[in-house]
Length: 295
Length: 228
Image (cartoon, rainbow over all chains, first blue to last red; front, side):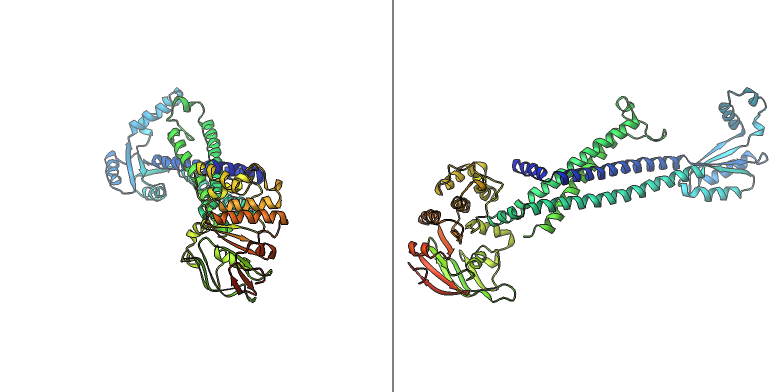
């Protein structure tokens, strides 16, 4: 092990510029990986939450009786596309209205339960079925209006999917660059040690003995850069969370409605990054050794 | 019992004429044998075949009764540890000092640090370099480099020591010293096979001489001379 470290230090000293470039590019790769991984995880979590919260409100005409509304409620509850149905009577609507406008007594003076419509609040199992359900509801006799926050949710979903695609693309691009850089680094080292490797072979070195330092070098770069990027990730994630993290580990994160246990997430992120660093270094060097170390 | 045996071995490089043509001979355990002949006669090809740096075009090379050509790639290091080679151009590692250059032969065999620290001073003592263990190759003379090369070849106690044109790059005085070392090693039981075209050494040593010309064995005599 001491010899591997010694060889590594000599190699870094000999190829200072290439070693530094490798370290920087690999760190950027893993930082991008960590950033987009986090963005994807949090935005997808937020989409799921919003999907669960997404509801259609059906307002009924005044002459549509409570009995009819409750009958519809029973029918909707059996619908597979619907996860939850809640009836809001005229009286309950008034209560909500008063609650929302308690600071405006003048407005409240002119309001009575009669002028507010009764409604059904419906939650769909899937965001994608909201539009179809809304169209269906509009056709029902006695329905005054159908409302839902289609655009907000769909916009959010669009951006979340975009993060996913852009993130995936960037991670792939940087991984390819990193992989190539690792191969270039090992190739340079192999070339600069050409005669030494030939001599080692002639005095009876096994393939494994000759390959070991190269694999060690690349895995070292992979691990160091992934740890550096993990530190960068911790810094930016915690800067978002702020000092709350230390007081309350189960911190509310990104959107005020999405709860993410930051501590657990950071541990998972760390494992993913370090494992990626190891794998990139290991397989990158193995490819380079196979390609350039002729035995 | 034959330790090394060449049976009808031929070697062709591409479309050129044969570097070796139906060569057959055997060498017993503990022998000292010169392979002589002019440059390009096929001496180095013979050495390369023995350590399987190259494969024969036809025929069989046997080492300890095993076909060298059939040794799996994974077992090649083991063969090369049994055959120590002293190269004409020394092939020492310029970035390592004398001690490290010898130690590398043991490190590749995963020897312990303790074994390395015991063996290296011993072999350096045998070739008379134990007072120069911290010197780098650039600080050694041609003769010293050659002895360093022998020390490395001997480090893992090979069954056979092969020297390929070892005196080609050193002065006559160093050559004489070098031959003394080889003779000493042979007297300790190691088979020595030396390829050379230095007739003065061959004639002086009075050992077995196999003469090769144009890839063919012309003569094979005990106590022979360079020119028969």
